[in-house]
Length: 394
Ligand SMILES: NC(=O)c1ccc[n+]([C@@H]2O[C@H](COP(=O)([O-])OP(=O)(O)OC[C@H]3O[C@@H](n4cnc5c(N)ncnc54)[C@H](OP(=O)(O)O)[C@@H]3O)[C@@H](O)[C@H]2O)c1
Image (cartoon, rainbow, N blue to C red; front, side):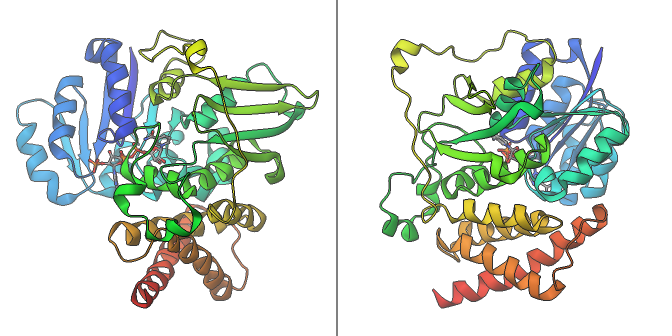
């Protein structure tokens, strides 16, 4: 029986992973080792009971008493707090889903690799902040990382049987997000609610806003560079409003392999779960005659400054990814709280990168995970100062 852990089980990716496990036989078919959640203790407890998990861990220590009450008599062990989440990753499991949102997902993924788990990686922040370390750890432990982001799963699938040396370019598709057709001068006034109205994908709140600003695509550009080891200028972005081509690989003979399917994350989660096989999945089949037309357009960098910043981060390398991600998370928090406007997020991130350049005098080489976490911490402090200042000027 395959053993499985899910980090971020109560989130959008986590729920869809649980859905696939239940359809494939649930507790009768899998030994579920660890399930973790954040604040949604009720749902975490419910899943842990249904899937007969060995341990359920919530991120908030304040949730422990409720988790214990809800799981009383179930035989599921309970724990709480970031350290307990990392310890849950020390429990060996064959397949581990990394689906915590943000930099909090970094440590559990690393710890799971230590015992050679196959790591299904939805947490793109892990590659953005610590890509070289994560890839080296996987190699050292003879562990395997499978991308779960739909774009990277598409690229991975387009590369099966191919020589990476024959790749000329990787073309990431982007929906353009909820505000893609707004006039440029109206974007500054966009509200959280408006940025959350994603045209194609149903996702967690943070990634949906990041889709509208294309900070999500910026992270994915860096993720592509780190995961597939291609040069930054080999990674392109194209807006494809229908979201039916999930990404493409262009080869040196001019061929382009595109991966298509309905916009449903259970495809890439299911691909990672069943890899290297393919299993039947409960996703809609495309009716191409109904689709009829696929459209593409180049992204406007004035509308999506995050894409320009991603290029700068790749040029800086080292700890720039950790600084970029942390600053982006803080800027998003301030936008969600109503402090700064939608278009100010990129300004906060850019100013943070510049401030850190001054603080550190250019010394941002990645040494180990501690350096990444220290940069994450420092960038959050700087970004918070800058965002507060800009909120005051608004
Ligand atoms: N959703 C998608 O379609 C999609 C697609 C591609 C990639 N991804 C990536 O997958 C990851 C998860 O995205 P999502 O949309 O599933 O996010 P989400 O719906 O916000 O869920 C995030 C999960 O992480 C938990 N969590 C939040 N803060 C935490 C913390 N500080 N410590 C531990 N756990 C914490 C949440 O718990 P509670 O809900 O219980 O608070 C939840 O289980 C992200 O890195 C995202 O970029 C998502």
